[in-house]
Image (cartoon, rainbow over all chains, first blue to last red; front, side):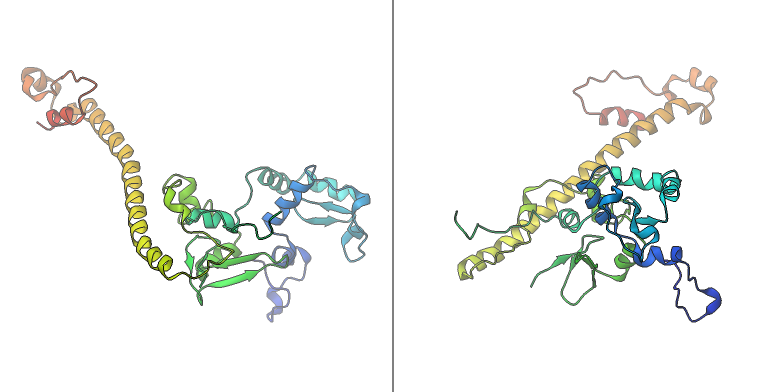
Amino acid sequence: MGGKCPSRKVKKRRYSHKTARRSKFLLKGDDAVYEELQQNPGGEMKEATLPLDEDLPGMGQYYCLHCDRYFANVSVRDEHFKTKRHKKRVKQMMGPAPHTQLDADLAAGMGAPDNGLKLMSM
Amino acid sequence: MRLEKCWFCSSTVYPGHGIQFVRNDAKIFRFCRSKCHKNFKMKRNPRKVKWTKAYRRLHGKDMTQDTTFEFERKRNRPERYDRNLAENTLKAIKKIDKVRSDRAASHIEKRLKVRKGKERREAQKELEQSIHLVKAPQALREDQSLTLPKIKVQVSQPRSDQNQAMEE
C-alpha cells in the first residue's frame, strides 16, 4: 500500500494525483490478479467484452489485466505493455501462485482441511 | 475455540489477539501481531522473508513431511462429544507433541551435520595447503615428524580416524 494521503491536513505534503492513490486503494491484490489470469490465460481482454464505464479512463475499454490499470486509448496501453514495470509484473505472474491462507496453514504443520463425511448420501 | 494461523508467519492466533483484514472481495487475512500486518501492507512475500514458516519450509529448514502433521486440521464438521474420546485425545496430544518435537530436532541435527562435514573438509584442506605459514618448508623436510602423516583410509572406516591423526 503506502503512498501519501490525498486528504492530508498539511497541504504542502499531500498528493492528489491518481498515481499516488492507486497504490493505496485501487490496485487489486496479487492473488486476485493471478486467479483472473488463470481464467483467461492470454492476459489480454478483448475490447468488446469490457463493459462501458464512463468513470474510468477511456470508458474502461483499454485494460491491462496484469497491472490492473485502465488506459485512455490503445496507443497508451500499448506503450504501457513495453514498460519495464509491466514486463516485471508479467514475469511475476508467470511464476508460482501467490501465498494464500492455505499455504500458511500447511507451513504451520496443519493437514488439509477436513470437511467430514458427506451429509447427503447420493 | 478455533485457533487460526497467521497469514504471514503461520503462527497460531489465539482469540482476542492480532488483527483481521477483510478485503473487499471477502477474502480474510489474519495476522498474529502488528509486525505481520505491517509486512503484509508493505506487500512482502512471506516466501521471501526469512523468519516466516513459509520460508523455512520452502528452504528445507524445517521438517516438511511427517505423519504428525495429519492431526492438526481445520475441521469444518464438529465431532459429537464423547467423554472417553476426549480423555484419550488429551492423553494422545502430549505423546504426539513429544514425537513431533523429537523428529523436528533430529531433522535439524541431520541438516547441520552436512555443514559440519563440509567445514571439517575445508579445515583439513587449509591445513594442508598453508602449513608453510606455520613451519618453514625446510624445517618440515628435516624433521619428518612435523608433517602430516599420510594414512590410507579405507572407505568403510569413519572419517574421525583421519582427524585424530591430524591433531597429533
